[in-house]
Length: 332
Ligand code: PBG
Image: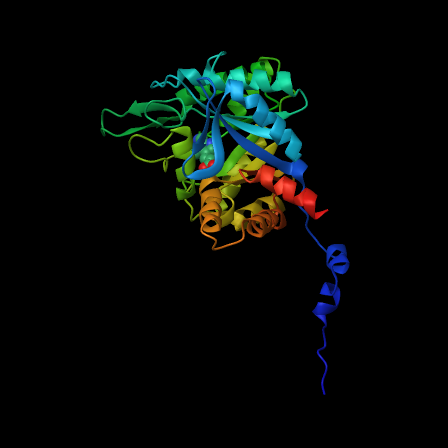
């Protein structure tokens, strides 16, 4: 009889042993829960492609914030559905815009809640793109103009900070957005407000349900001239490098599941906190499969979030945050 040279199963024999040698753990205080806020009264409307995720009017938001706190979540990321959209996305930087109102309200109910503001124009423009459209008369091609869009983004970020946002998260992928927003925040007296940059945001199919939720699908073309090509990882390093140089405080990779190698690469190359965005399509896939009884939702969600952690994510933005936090508490 020969015996196996290595006995890996020795350390898997009991739950206590497995727990003792566990290398990675999820923490609810590192989850960020996205919320969609809208106009109207008494609105709590489920997003069809995202079961369990809702649009809230401001009068229904407080009960949701209480539930977020009850779940053990200390941070939310806000998206707004405006009443009015136009070519310049003016509702994005209106001091009384829906996001600005929601920030003020949340800070009133729960001053200790970390409020992250997504800084972008696509939910507020009638064309659905993330900046100002420039039509090139020579080629007839319409595309997002980089530098004029930056000015509007800066106004948006400053208005969000004025409303009380704790973290500014610019997501529109214009070149130079971190430097522009950093300067704008500093000049307005917000030197203490960190920037969580959507450094590496891919042009991804996984945003489909979000675009339904935020009513932000581009009305023509796509976002490939500003969001990244899914084939590239060295380019991700250049994007992240620019953001670090420009003053980013945290670096985000988005989506997460198809980009675990990118999370790992950024973690190895940079010493800033790394954020993974577990996006809408990733959420919807799990919900659909679980709803059909094809997978177990709880274990699948915890396994995927753990995978993001293991890949190198410090912080995870996820629509599963409330459920995951509750499950983690039950496990203890
Ligand atoms: C705004 C923005 C998007 C998401 C977050 N901020 C979508 C997009 O680029 O269309 C997607 C989030 C998700 O899918 O959960 N630019």
